[in-house]
Length: 490
Image (tube, rainbow, N blue to C red; front, side, top):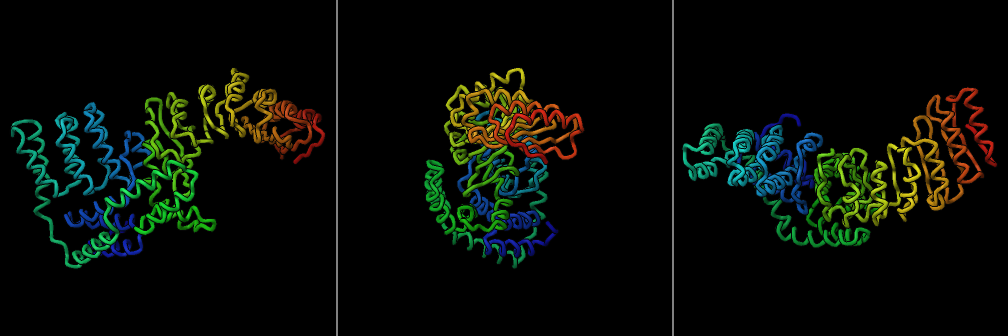
């Protein structure tokens, strides 16, 4: 953001609130607070944050996901709520200190103060490494509102104790800034008064929480009930909440794509954060106001959290960057019963899924394992609703085993990608086979795949080679294609 004066920040915040651009208003309020450390502006920041995060849940995170997807200004309170919850569970000291340290790059923000003070009163704060990380954050956030509570906390301990000494040093570093605080300019005081009145007009947040939670529960109880979403949208729109606008726009047959893009640009990280720490916010897609497609990223030592009710609107997941063990068990959770599309599944996951009641209709398998190809298709048959199958890193053997499998009779779409070739067909509809050469020296494998695809039917074949096949390669392809009744080349 361009460097603005406190008066300019206040003016922009007022204008943003008038046009219901709450995220922009919050950003300008934070800019004004960093220049003034005003308690009045801090209160506005907290009120607006509470409004923006209605319906949100505390977010758990690890340091890697935090670095990969830094928090936006809107979802920060939910991350701090997750930090509070962790601190109350008496975690191991290093785990807690690492999470506190992860916040160090964040800009000064008054919303840290209540969370940090709550943690400072807990037993985990006495652990040396946690104590140090906590005190460092108090200094980095330099909120004058922390001074009095910290002095009161200091008075509860022996002055010679390590904890009291650390608090004393922290107070010495914060207190001079408090004394240097200038009063707010009259124009900013007037701006604050207008913003306070605007937030008062939006109603009592506690009442909004209760009604919103009830309406949200109806959406999660039946995610396909569009009327439940529209009732929630009406309720939120009456109060100017951006989620209501998104639901209404995405349920409209003539939606304003530009406005939807703007709403998601600002709010999507918050709205997808309820799904847990390993969701790639930039890749999450929304339908009718809620997450529908999610890409996960997690390592083998990052166990996924149990899916919450917020997952009930998700219909597709991409696991290509997820190496978590027991993924099949996680995918079989009741809150994930609506997931019908799974991308990035490895063969071992397919084998595990096949033994469970699972409603996947669209499956994309990566890193095909030719050693167990026949077994893989035997397992795929046990996914009763599977009608679309994609295989990446495949060989012609994948085509052969699929054509021999009972699965072929119900596949509406079968698509395989080898290293230099691809083949697509619709076995259940006896549609034409479409084969494509995608790289030089792939003609031999493509010819083999075309021959194996005869098992799906001989009616028609379309081959796309471009200039990638040499004379010998064309002979191989023509020979493989000779078994089809109709062949088209391009």
